[in-house]
Image (tube, rainbow, N blue to C red):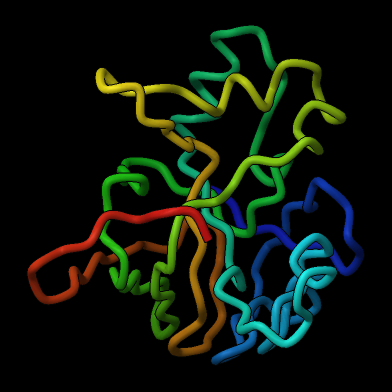
Length: 176
């Protein structure tokens, strides 16, 4: 992990922290998206009682590199992620993958982050830059992955991440 971030309010960016505390079944302690039920405003408006499958947002730093090469000024936490990784192809991991973070914490991946219009409010053109199409025309969402806290614990910048794949057959991550 190269950075951990949280925000107590529904701001787009999340300030980097030395460490964050993950709470089992809830998310990041003190983060505005923490809770058993959905906390994202657009989803609360639809159904405030749906389970929160978006407790933790992870983005790979390689996306920041790609965006910086395209002229965007982005860094860890600025796209709303709680955890910024490097060297892990998050988008290719299957649903149910468990990421062992630091000494104790475990995050289970639930799906892909769904880019929203706030990206363009942060920097014009950023939303289009995190969307792509494959050779068959299928939409590719590159704005990170979402997960739930399966086992809580303290997570720090610089901690190792171990990947535990779910049993086969694997199911590709989809929008949550």
